[in-house]
Image (cartoon, rainbow, N blue to C red; front, side, top):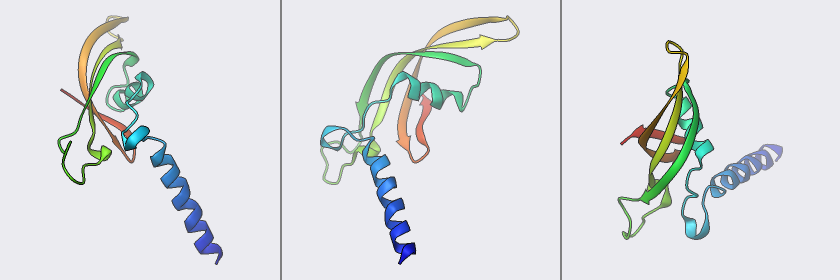
Length: 111
């Protein structure tokens, strides 16, 4: 009995954490600059700061039956600040990244 209560509790916690990512109407809450920073730092630890300029949502299944916000992609334009240890200075660069929400949080790829 205790095992079933524990499973129910875990299920509710997981559902609650996933549903927290969805805003009104089941759409994903767009990534914030901090989300993008964490996603990019998984690939490049020289990134110091990110300034979010714009994000646009797309979904290849938009308008089709069974479309789900899980397939939402966010095309974001950001200004990246990276520290270059060789030059001993920070460099700023505008970049485009595509973000999606997975079970590990926001993940990114360059556009």
